Length: 511
Image 1 (cartoon, rainbow, N blue to C red):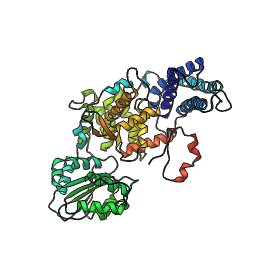
Image 2: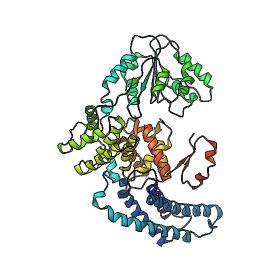
Image 3: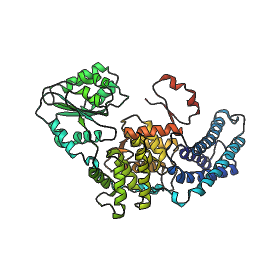
């Protein structure tokens, strides 16, 4: 969340000044002590306060006040540091550092008083459902990788039959289903299947998404065909190279997450019909798009039945073990609340796996889930995902929200993500660990909770790259906008000059 990240960031600056042998500015000892005390209290307070607020489309006023006060302190300190370095001691703004910080401390006094009153009313029953100490991030949940295709075994066999049938004409096979229904998971299992790989001479996978670029799509496919091409080439030139490389070969191309027929029109002419059984698989949420792509019937992803939903949840939460008898009834109600949507089951499973396995905690999760499903809100899937976000330990929330900055279907290198988290100052130091180690630990925790998808694992068994599901990314961006954690400048030139940007602490300019 923005408030916690802001507190951690300003505390990191104070600690850096204290450790610096020749700091550019010096905080008054009493002010530094007062800020440290208030920030430490508010960090702890947010750990028990945030997860239990009901869902709202508006930011919580108290959290916003905490974030604003922390941002103000950070801005005052940083502006005086910059001013001292650039202008050799001339004050930044009309007020001295001491005067400016004194006003912020007074604001924090009022916020701290309100927080203490709220803390007294929360009571013991409002302790975190999830294990909330960073050291718990070292513990992995018993997630079974083979559980990804639970309930879709028949779909997998049917798709394999379509891909290896005797029909020699080029076939386009649309996999259609709602977000989170397992379209990409099915396609990935097909793509990685050894027999399918042996059946085709060449194969390639490319994510299309809503914001696509034909040139990048062609380059991405060609690189998988071992063709070294630059993105400076024209679409026509790249298309000709692709056509030449595919001509006469039996190929499999998977176009994941297509949203527009225009994207298909941009590449279809470069995919030859070799009359040798080549196949193109397209995943999309849009049934009408699937019909436009192919005259054959769409391959519809079905939601899981009760028993398959139970098996999937059980494998995620318990691994090879069985559900304790005292939790069976609650577990069944949780399964029912997910409505057979695999993504909802996987995310809730990640939450349950990281929580204490008690009737009290699981009952509370089930009640929240029931209130979501029984409401008349048509965004029930989003609210289930949001519930899992709210139940995250407070130190993981800023790291998760940061994932929304990456574009749809982007493969994110762990090394880059670690560098960004560290540079942003959103990681709270842990004794005996470097910030890079903490970042890797938090990424693993998010993956264990199924909020981040593992793309590749290195030879040392650690995450090498990751992705985030589109629906979870959408949820991130909604929460980011609500909390004003950061602002993403879109392609619209007018957005660059939006006065709203001036009040933003973080502004991202995507490529």
